[in-house]
Length: 107
Image 1 (cartoon, helix red, strand yellow):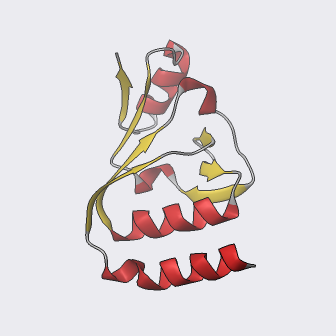
Image 2 (cartoon, rainbow, N blue to C red; image 1 turned 120 degrees about the vertical axis):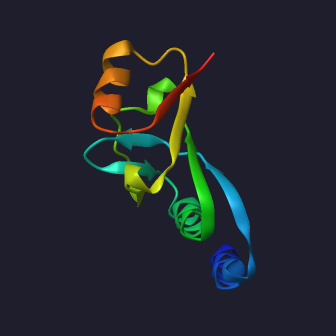
């Protein structure tokens, strides 16, 4: 219960923060469902960060694509760019880029 009190306190005070660039991680990314995670607490915090940040970047490795897990965080349109590793398959990369997603494979 104590962890939930801390989360509520944190969320109530988020509006006092100025966040220019938010780098968000997640456990699942899909074109249909967007970005998701397993933890309700982390998803709630990430949602709030996305709301108040000027720019948002999603950082996920190739294994997170085409996965939809427990808690929805945001649609892909909430992110300026998705950054992933070079192991992302070309077909998946092309599918996301063709759908209008700004996707960058780091080398």
